[in-house]
Figure 1 (cartoon, rainbow, N blue to C red):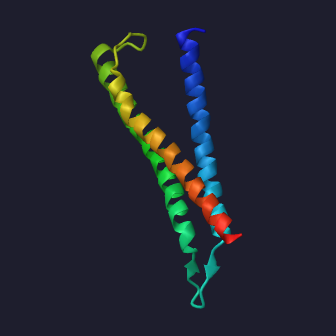
Figure 2 (figure 1 turned 60 degrees about the horizontal axis):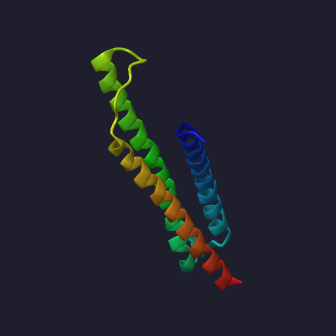
Figure 3 (figure 1 turned 90 degrees about the horizontal axis):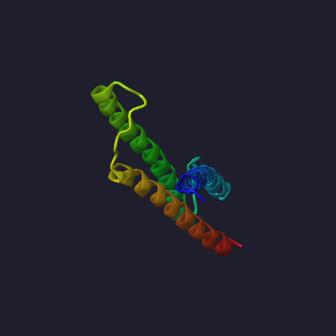
Length: 129
């Protein structure tokens, strides 16, 4: 297997994982929504054991946003800088791997946040049943 094929496999896997994290985050919020109740004054109440999983799902979705925001700003700025320097689209340029560290931080943080949220959700549901 060529390194390029390994990289393509990695990109495909992380893209799919990001899609799953988004779907699971919304699904987790929907499950928690089913356990809500309304008080006499019309306010919504979420059982306290579901607050932590809800916060983790929201955090994971927010980290997903930050990941793509960071990537857009960083790679857009690098593209702009190198375009202004060379004015050619087919020019090879050396880009340090450190520019991707922020995106990797947000990526793995959102995955861990989602996993932790689902662990807490499963524990909370088990206590309810």
